[in-house]
Image (cartoon, rainbow over all chains, first blue to last red; front, side, top):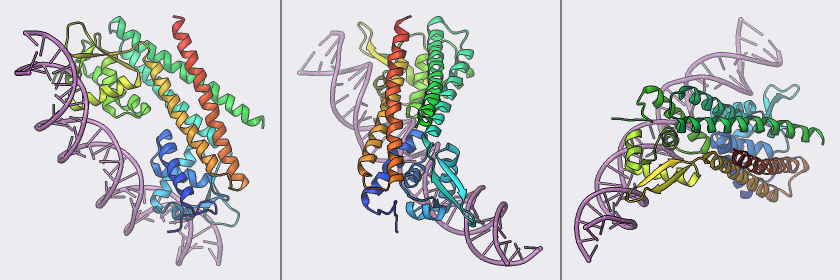
Length: 161
Length: 161
DNA sequence: AGTGAAGTTCAGTCAAGAGTGAACTTTCAT
DNA sequence: ATGAAAGTTCACTCTTGACTGAACTTCACT
């Protein structure tokens, strides 16, 4: 079972891949496999076909289909066809981290929505509880606003390169 | 099975509790039960004993022990004894959201550590891959720094009240 | 239109993790 | 010191969700 990474099939590179799987996967709310796929693509010189990804990760075709779907959806990976080829290849995007930041913003926005709904459903509660729901709402309002700023700022800092 | 929330045992309040369980629990990397417990405490007029939490959530003693441990550790809930009582009570903290923000900061710091380790392990890779690892490192450096600012700012905005 | 390769879907299997409850330890009032 | 109540631990069960693989669909070239 060859599992090449870049051109270095060492155990080191593989443990790095697995670390990505565990940590980035968890951070993004992905299954471990998606994080590992992200790691492989990040460390690959060239775009990879699904078959290459599959053998690098020692995984099934079905799983690869799902993972590439997730990665493309998240904005971290680009999917395209090389001219004259009938199969897709996948490549880590230069602006991948913008996608991750956007993803965090979306998650926070969902929690803001929950806070709003909670506040709306709790109008007839005693003062203290209403105050708590208000604090929650204020917190997530603050967070969403700041995340938006952060996203703009990060995009800007990259264009300045 | 009485599951009172505040003084309103309606289905509405319970579905709100379950929403907390699903969304906040997920956001904090907790099991659903911890998020539900957080919800009950947030919506309770008075501090609750473990027995009260248990009956509100219709859960086991062992589970309550673990959940209160998580919540106290996260900094969202305070555990103390009322004078003359032999049992602990649990109360949602005024500064609970600071704990959540700190938690996010810690998660991001872990990813920064991963990025550093990845960069260190990838010094002999070709340019393109090294550049990707550098971008990852820069991204998480940026995020940790900004989260720290955010935390300070949020703390400040609360003191101004 | 026909053919084979590429990609997707989905029912089933397997593993990870949440929750339980009984046994155990700690704590405190007497 | 003793005993009852409070709290913790842990082996087990049950649920959830990740991954597989075979059947199916889509696509591009002839």
